[in-house]
Image (cartoon, rainbow, N blue to C red):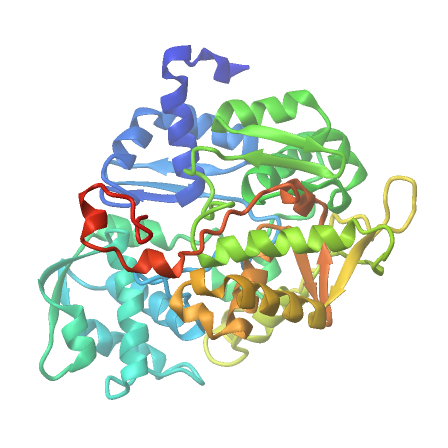
Length: 459
């Protein structure tokens, strides 16, 4: 293979560059850090060829940016945009972000925050159901979150003032930004004119990709984009490809990750932490409670004396997200006159319709909401003193966030009345969680204990 031309001593550097590009899609002089862009530029030629050959991705590298244009086989709502304060973007923030990009594309080299807000407010007023009023604190906060997202990626650089001051009082506060136009243009380069889409399905890979090379790229894309690739969700041809050592070895060589193969599927294990956006197991209340809950789930599933119900449909195609996004597409204004006169594409899927290779229905263990709530409440009662303060009295919110984490990791799949347990969850069933509870006497250290003696108050 051509990729074997990389010298063994330089292979680690190349793999770090590949992971960086696959994880971020956009690299600038400041994002995700200042050493990323020189690393990508060093390996630009090799990365451009390999990412195209293996995954069908297009890479553009300039002096100031590196932009990866991926091919999407499915929509994924598990990696939302987040503010600098880790606030998940809602629809309003996404709208402000898009409109801010449109305004910056027509701006000069600098712009004030209030001027940008005026442009966004003008654009927003033309969209039914959307507006930006600087008199509303919630609108200002959402707008500043969108501007902060652009600033983190280098599209905007604060030259003077303070965005927080403007958000608190737009009459008294102001901020001036330098605009990096190459970053602005690199941020929004859709593969198709959005005005000509009747459905977000038009953003996904075409269904005509049925050649063996295309199918192999789809499988490789799944490996680097999903925490776990289950055989159940692949077509028969793709299952055969996933079982080939050559395909797995190609992805391992490019990324430096190692594949863990099980009967149910394959997962790439990222010990570097530079490709995964979520480390698990990890620190923090959510990760620790998730691991505790996994242990409880595993105990219930493996209890042969008290079998739990099983249901089909753990990995069936779910068009709900597609339908929700399609319902949000404006049908009036600029979209209608510019839309092509074609019928929407019919949703298709590679999934195996809940059947394994032998034609038998695939089922998964099912746990209802009541069991989950009771279990998380019990864990909170037992270990709550060690949790972050915000979760100690919010078992409902804690449950929601923990289930969202396990869903993102593809360890469970939520259903209307509970959850389905996916096979990869068993990987962590033997994990041991050590929760250190501080004893009451440890909170009070006597003076004698501080000079080396071992009184009862000693730690």
